[in-house]
Length: 143
Length: 193
Image (cartoon, rainbow over all chains, first blue to last red; front, top):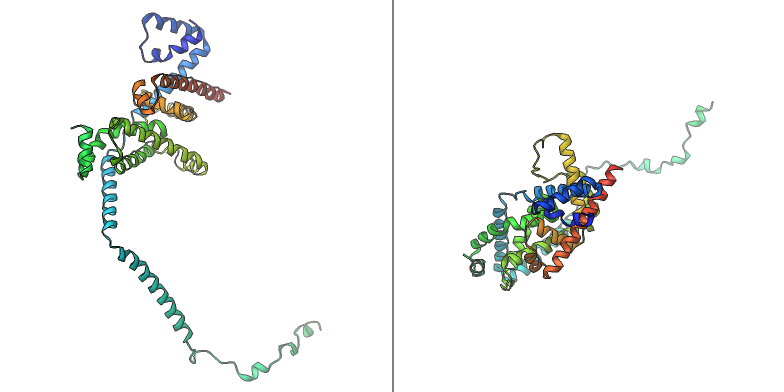
């Protein structure tokens, strides 16, 4: 048996569907051919991994999740349909008007504020004081 | 009760009947998703999305093909779309690999000493090889091999789902297996070096 034929029979060999004679021929070839032997081993690994993934079970609550999702979707759809068109327009208009009114009142109240006696006034004499003409402390420190 | 009868009742407004369809096809949809995504949680989420999408488009089902063929087509398309989307976001994928690489990977390996840490590491590595090799296949080859290996479908059934001939499916499966062997061998050699 050559490598090409051996690779061709690989699937049947792994699934056990090979006749006794062919199976022996494949095994004899595998004993002598390192490449085919390695390829068979790798395919066996792939088979094990795929079988393991195949055996994984889905979430036991998946059906419940799906049905809940569909019911929610249906409910949302029904609610959306029941809202009259004028309500769909009125709601954003009302929200925008409330926001504009809140901003206007805020600005208006802010502009009418006048400070009442809590701020200390600066004496008039102090405002005439010329800071630039004051003697520098450095003059004394250099002595 | 046949699928057609159930669908008829659902379209007349009996939502609860859809549960029967979900229970009937949940396992095949999940298995196919697993074959494409190799992650339990992703496969669960996609199965849920597929059934919701199927419900929304149920009125488009004309009964020309069997319901199982129809749902297989939806599943294959949804899985391929998800893979295309995730390949477009390599940054997100890298983040996922960092924070949740083993998330949802609950495999039942048929080995006696599965709790041995060394065995677990070898198994995880081999699993990664197979996953990489499968993901590197062209879409048509991948679809054919998943439907054949994970769903045990005949070449005739696969041909109906993929809307092609049995001969084409046979060629696809042979090429997919040859490519898988090649990729696995390359990964194994890379590991040895």
